[in-house]
Structures are given as C-alpha cells and as structure tokens.
Image (tube, rainbow, N blue to C red; front, side):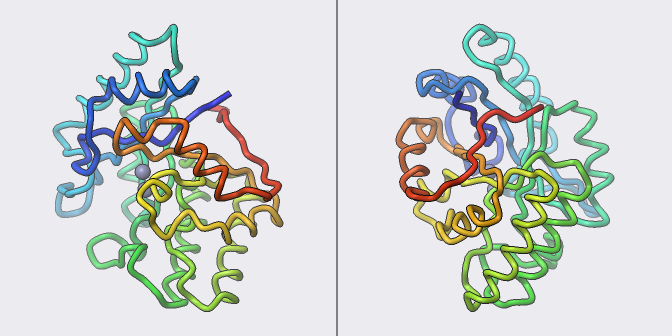
Length: 250
Ligand SMILES: [Zn+2]
Ligand SMILES: [Zn+2]
C-alpha cells in the first residue's frame, strides 16, 4: 500500500499547480492515502506574515479545498488534511489552538529554523556543533508535545559538523524517535531538488537503531508525485535493512 502524507499547495508561495492535479497524480501513481500538509500561517507576536506559508486569509480556502477533494475523490483515494509545522517554544500552544480549530488529521514536524524564526538560524545555514545540538533538542522537545505524527527531513541540518559530532547528535535524535515510536521521513523533495538531504548516513544510523522510516514525497509540484520519486528513494537506501512503513494510524 502506497501512502504519501507530505504534500504542499501553491498557497505556500513556493509550490505550484492545482490541488486537483496533486490528487490525480497520486491516483495515477497508485497512492491510496494522500495527505496534504502545507505550511500553515504561524501566529507570531507581531503578526503572521511569512513568505513561505499559507497567508492567514487563505487557510480556510486550503482546508475547504482539501475537504471538498476528499469528498469528490472518496472512491479513488483517501485524502487527509494536515499541516507541516515548526516547533517554537513559547508560541506553540497558541499556534496549536489556532490549528486545532481546523480539525486536522495530523501535523508533521519540519524544523526549518532553530532558535525561533525572527532571530534564529535557518536549519540549512548552520555549521557549528552548538546549532546542531540545538536543532536536535528542539526536534525532541517538539515531538514530546505529542502534537506531531512524524519528523520530516530529520537530516535537514546536514552532516556539516565533524562526523563524530553528527553521529552523536543524530543518534540522540533517532534514539528518541525510536523509543517514542515516531517515524522519521526519507524526504523526496530533497531528492528531487538534489539537496544535501536525505543523507544515506542518517539511514545507516536508522538501520542500527531500528527506526520506523516513512517516505514523504514533500511534493511542491504535482509532477513530484510519480513512481520515479519512489525509485530515487529506494536507490538511496539500497542494501539497508530498514523498517519502512506506509500507512499511518491516523
Ligand atoms: Zn519541510
Ligand atoms: Zn514540506
């Protein structure tokens, strides 16, 4: 059974295509559960404008569109309403209260910044040990809230520190995920964009630790939803004995 819980829409300003095209490509690819997980507006103290999230005045449109496609395509595919969210201590409860009012099926943790968003550092952009440690701390603290279903692109921070440090920090993250039964994602967007993630080294650790691994297409274009994304994902982890899961219990 093929499932994909990581799908964006054009409302986040860095994805393209119509919602319906994502659904139709998923059906063509043989996907049976398709979760939309766009970046929701984040309520900061000074407002919620963001160049990479759904605008505040478009969130109803997002939810209504997903729910209406869910009805329309109910015979062909099971569509879920979700979000991809960062964990920012101090802002999280207010944000969750806002998101819960939309009754999402699930929320995935994508920690794109560390140390908050306005004063913090983009997870791509750091290269020192302290920031990697902070990244792992924040991912763990976020997952501990119980509000997230799985961890998107755990290797977003990359393997830029000395390998002993990366191994120590990613082992800490993966051990927490394993002990608390959170799947970690093998991210298809990184594969399609040829980014520094997903990184085979992380999945070598996941093999040792015994993590559940979920393949997330992280579609930002309907054409990302295709058999080739899965082929690339399986090529990356060839030879590893991983516990790949498909359907989430949501
Ligand atoms: Zn992400
Ligand atoms: Zn994403």
